[in-house]
Amino acid sequence: MRAFSYLRPDSVAEAIEAVAGDPDAVFLGGGTNLVDLMRLGVAAPVRVVDVSGLSTSIADDDSGGLRIGAGVRNSDLAADLRIRRRYPALSQALLSGASGQLRNMATLGGNLLQRTRCLYFQDTSKPCNKRQSGTGCPARTGIHRDLGVLGVSESCIATHPSDMAVALAALDAVVVVAGPDRSRRLGLDEFYRQPGDDPMRDNTLSRGELITSVELPPPSALLGRSGYRKARDRASYAFAVGSVAAAITVRDGTVQDVRLAFGAVAPRPWRARRAEELIRGGVAGRDAFEAALDSEFAAAEPLSGNAFKIPLARNLGVAMLSALAGLETAAGS
Ligand SMILES: Cc1cc2nc3c(=O)[nH]c(=O)nc-3n(C[C@H](O)[C@H](O)[C@H](O)COP(=O)(O)OP(=O)(O)OC[C@H]3O[C@@H](n4cnc5c(N)ncnc54)[C@H](O)[C@@H]3O)c2cc1C
Ligand code: SF4
Image (tube, rainbow, N blue to C red; front, side):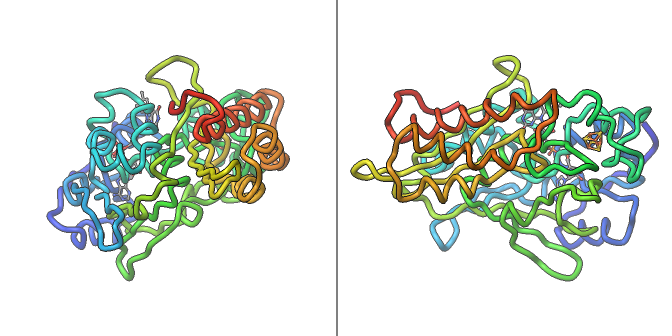
């Protein structure tokens, strides 16, 4: 690892100023991803600005929702009673990720901005368009079992690895960002970007923009019956091969409302809006859920080694919706 300076500012303004004016400075949350990437030589900041102590509370906001500080640790967020009761998908998603020790360190802001686990991205002896623009994407013809099938491009097929972000997408969370010139509130669809021909940027943040909090909408019967389900290679301490966060309300056999997002299939949490449209207002049944998800995944662009993700994610979605709708017994991850 190369030498770097460490700064722990006392305010958001000081943190933003320290990073905005220095192209070699980065924010640091719990360090569970950034420090690994520094050890691997993938990241080489000259100045590290520790923001983990700046916004660490979970507060009720005026609308009845919650405002979660970007420095809140994943374990504290998962354990918060308001989260567990009002937004169970979020608690379940957090608890399905990493390990207890990692969740004790990882912060909300850092979790949203963790980088892809693509093997080539993490290996500086290999070319990779996301690490160095224009060098190529060896994953397309190489190891891509864990990579994406939706929203990918010729340049990059990486997936976003966060479990938590999938739940936040389904819950319609808003990311609050402060920057040198302005503050912004971004839905997850606006926050993350697809690779196109510029895969080095995972999101729409500009230099110096700091995530200060995430807002959750007011609790509702829909969100209170949400859930998260994750398929992985072993029962714990493994990234998702496919995952789903969902919420659904059914009255007299008809779907009143539905939210659906998938993980580990795309460069960002994949909000399945096409499937939602087809399911909302229709009969609550497995056939309808299957047809809607087939339609959603019709846009997929699989390669030989990751085509299995389409039936995997589709079946996870059908099972999760069926469970939440009371068509099956078990719900959750
Ligand atoms: C062995 C292992 C297993 C794992 N398994 C899973 C898993 O199953 N599921 C899962 O979801 N995750 C998993 N993770 C990833 C883990 O969840 C992330 O490493 C963690 O959430 C990152 O949070 P952090 O606070 O440590 O971020 P950091 O490493 O500190 O930072 C990550 C990035 O965010 C930026 N950043 C941090 N805070 C802010 C802010 N407030 N504003 C702007 N930028 C900011 C940093 O500059 C950096 O680019 C695993 C990690 C490891 C090492
Ligand atoms: S999929 Fe993306 S991250 Fe992986 S090698 Fe290709 S360009 Fe790099």
